[in-house]
Image (tube, rainbow, N blue to C red; front, side, top):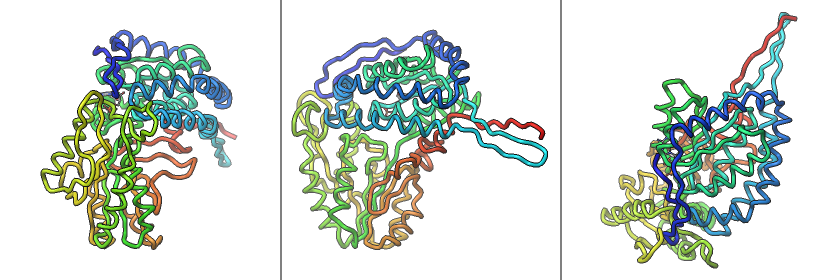
Length: 455
Ligand code: ADP
């Protein structure tokens, strides 16, 4: 299969060249995982949880190495990479406990029988993950998949193979041999893994790849959890705390150089305050400096690759050609590296590609609406995606009404999207199929099975 050329997107330097797993290596990794799965599934959820808790120390031990690998391989700032490693490692213990709780049986009875609903693992799970949160995204699949008693074949993104090895090592040293195996490669390896003898695919990545996986999994009705992209809207009514809304919009659009599945992609501001709001966003966006993630005073690294940067640049150029106003950025810098500056567009017509296709870059895209709830809802829902959304209004009841009508899995009122700890990460419509996190999300890595006996 296609080899991986792992490049530092800040410099273009080749960090590693790794051959893509061959078909027989992929099949071997699946067979090894299958062999190990039976014994792993026989452990109680609590015994599995105890072993998985060992990951905390194993990740902590590698904290510096993982953070450095993340910055080198995909470019995010070292501070952000360190934050990701600390944050997700700090969350492992609670996640493992929550999965253990989700796997407990439920008892039912009538006067004739007693039934226990147990949670049977699916078997072997392919974990296919992206590069934007190179530790966080894999953990969101690996922990519930393993905790439920599945074994896992892990394929990290071809952009972060070295980070993938560190994650694999941190887990492998805590579970019996073969319970997790690793394959490296690009989309061709991912596709072959989906086709192989796995029972479930846990995937985080783009909508188009999600669709391909779904159609390839259909032949054997393999189980799926697909967490996909979004085109998240933010709706700002004139009576909002505009300063707080501008902060949310700017940070939400530019964080991780805009490469976040739930980044703010479309902003609809009530027309009567749009000039004021544009100025606020512009001032805030000017403070976002791009550069090598290891440099001081940099808030955004490069895009993950030159190809990704060029896609973003093309959307911006096209938008400006077709009437959007460029308030900041929008010029591809000279020199090496996949850099692109913080960019602010205003007057973006909802028909433009930048308002329709996922941008996945550091672009704040501002549009206006007339202040009517129905119009805000129509614009917000004018996308096939449905990951997150956010509504800002001084009238919280109105905020709740609009939030209730938006077709998104996670909506915030006067804040951005994600829910409190313990709630799932959900994409509605074409932003997902199945979902991750919370008791309900964890349970998708097992199938309920009823065991009944007469009384
Ligand atoms: P992104 O480029 O935004 O990471 P992708 O959906 O292309 O999004 O990639 C996410 C993960 O899916 C990566 O690990 C990638 O190698 C893998 N992948 C890409 N194409 C396929 C495919 N056809 N089948 C399975 N996995 C794939």
